[in-house]
Image (cartoon, rainbow, N blue to C red; front, side, top):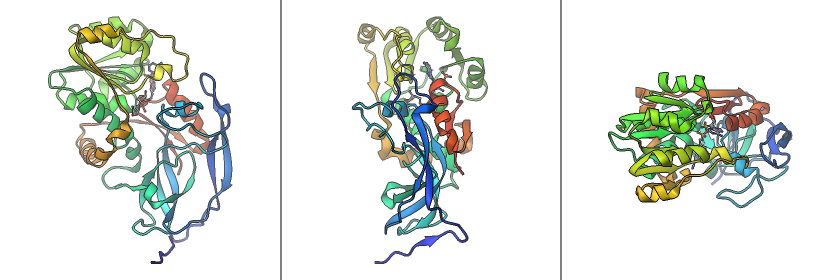
Length: 346
Ligand SMILES: NC(=O)c1ccc[n+]([C@@H]2O[C@H](COP(=O)([O-])OP(=O)(O)OC[C@H]3O[C@@H](n4cnc5c(N)ncnc54)[C@H](OP(=O)(O)O)[C@@H]3O)[C@@H](O)[C@H]2O)c1
């Protein structure tokens, strides 16, 4: 069967794309010098391929690990090659059956303005259900992470006291609201600085908010949850995890979602007393969101309803233009974001 090439009318097709490449591997915290903005030719489209103009891309804390050259659950970024990550964009040329020009797709070829992609590498998204950028946040992997953490990994039961770290961020802000929706009696969030703790209370419906940068995390948590906590969603590791294990009640559940305090390898914070976890019969379970991709479609349906009916409110921090992508990434590591950190490309 021959597949016709179709294009958006009156669109001047690009011959090149700008992309962000890994220029050097960091030791400790990365800087702008570890990235390079490069223009390179676009490949010719083969049958079964599409050309996508990226409109939004995601920057995520896990990308820090991919800057190191060491074995992990996901391959390192390669020096002198474009970085990758979640993005959404508009199809401007299609040589693929079933993918229409003008449709919006999500895929993994972020960090560039245009991408030539196999049809199998993209997922069409329904922008009548929610705006495209939500598919990188509440309807994307960060939303799914929050949902999976609290429904499966560390299940929230009605009446629970729930503690969420990095609570003003993408995973944490959705997790706090879902914990309430799942019947938690009290949801406590920790975040850096008074503006973020205010947001937790005023915008995201947390019952109590802790500014961990103000110090005495253990004392602040004890004041917010005098009888202890039942569930902890850990995005931070180190001191947060240590304090949560001290505060957790018998049969408590801890979801080990992330450990951002150590991502630059400069964390000297003490870890938890795991014997306390043992004697309280606490379950600590790690998770990777990829394991939940089979329920992604089902989750998107639910999350779109929650967005529409106000169960989930979102906020985004948006950097404009591909050249700002490294700054956005450095910002998500240091807390420059509230809600999902995004880069708008078009
Ligand atoms: N397991 C999985 O499959 C999976 C999937 C998605 C995300 N994650 C993990 O979940 C966590 C949140 O990811 P996200 O995408 O939603 O990012 P995010 O929370 O939107 O952004 C990261 C936040 O971490 C906080 N932070 C940075 N350094 C910190 C430190 N030393 N101590 C305490 N907080 C610190 C900052 O907020 P403050 O201003 O409050 O410090 C920053 O805004 C990350 O650890 C990420 O790796 C895991």
